[in-house]
Image (tube, rainbow, N blue to C red; front, side):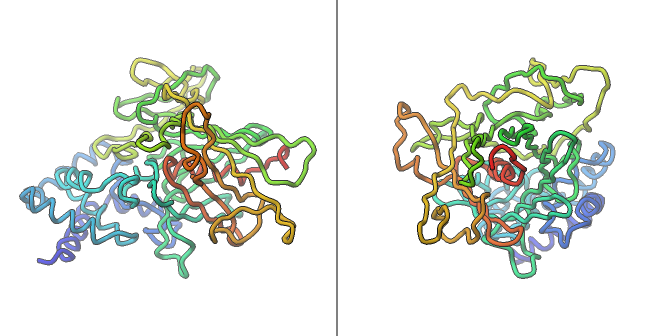
Length: 428
């Protein structure tokens, strides 16, 4: 039996066994043109189902997938290695995710074969969106803005394809307008932005003037300590599993310089990455890299409940923290600070210019490049400080490119770029 035949049979078997999971995923992504564009594979939809339903499905999996679970380890490893090597780009890379959905033994082998994004440069599972990008080359993406629904969709690729069917949706964000401020909710899918959903990834909250933005992650970074903040919150979270701390963790702060004279020059911004140490950008340095998945496949994600008149609480180890407005995470090291690269004034064009290497074609105040800003005492080479870690710019009406690299993740880079879309009356 050929390798493609094995993968095809695995997908057919998965579709037959997990029909309930697929229907749930289709319900969430029904507004899209295609599953590959608007949702991650149905592997992650299991976590939204009741425990009894998950138990029944696991029993069916064990009965019907016994012949695949009992494959010799050497043969199983060879099959998955071949699939991983042959399917390098989306949508074909869904075959790798299908292998992880067969059973527990296949999932464990797949997790061993698929390397972290920093090593392989390929986005496979949702956890890749929270892993630092590769060092040698940037991950090239583009953002599509929908003004009617105030949504922002992040796709993998150089630019939008001709028809759009093969565009791989990575993350989606929606601007939520309130009386005094706005906020952005970031999700894995384009039509579910509920904070209680398992597709919830994080959020972005600005201050009233639009000069300071706080990036919240739905899960704490690796090897980080969360500093408590006693500011009140309207939500009450309760952790059920110690392996899945719930809440919002302050992982970064983006600040824009206040413009008093209201000149029309480029914006000046600074990003403090609380969860990334500054020394990680030097040779041999290591940025925090989660290796699991955004939500565990083996446990149910509990719904978020509200409680009136009670103080918010979240159980994280033995410390009670504010679930919605926790303090910044601490890595016990100097955090990485990013600043926008200063543009130069072009006399002939009469505008501010940056070298985007052909990735940006339309002048806009939203265009920027970020480089590291570190203290000279840390001894980081100047060449590392000149590398563009994140660049963002306009290429057409409501279309923007976003290229990021180590040590930022796709989630962090996307959240930073979202700050460009918010109104900043004090900065312009």
